[in-house]
Structures are given as structure tokens and as C-alpha cells.
Image (cartoon, rainbow, N blue to C red):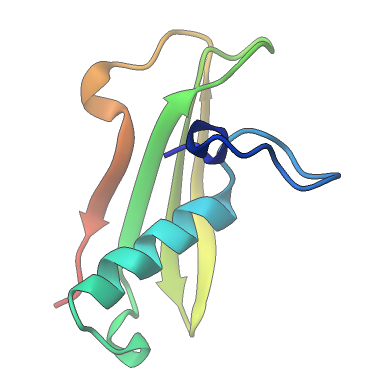
Length: 97
């Protein structure tokens, strides 16, 4: 979910579109919901696709992966075409083993 969809604007100085930190937060919520401790998160990968807003890009797909205890952006795909419905929202790309 885009942070602005919750009815809250971004904190001062932050962007109002979906950020990698937002995706990492969703990934952690998902993994915590599965009762997995952080040491089991290594190698998991998650994606999020959303409309790109008012700039030259119509859509953005972001992916993060857990590496050495950190979330690392491994994909940032800006598209000049609208996002396919199947690519929208939160995705589990590689789940915990």
C-alpha cells in the first residue's frame, strides 16, 4: 500500500510515492507474520509495483533482497507504460526456506 493511501501524507522532506524502505517494512511484516526470526530472512526477496505518478514514468517496480542483515534494492524498473494489473502491489519473489 502506498503510504498516502492510508490517509497520511509523507513526513516533511520525504517523497509521497512508494519507497524501498516501505517495501522493506512490508517484507518484515510478512516475515514476522510467518513467525520467522530475522536470522531466517537471509536471501528472501520481495517486490512492489505501482503507478509512477506525474513524471515521465507511468509505473515503477522495485525489489529488495535481504543480504547480510540489510535490505538491499536489487531492482528498480521505471516504465513509460502503465503497469499490468498482475505486476501491481506487494509480491513475494523468493520466500524464506
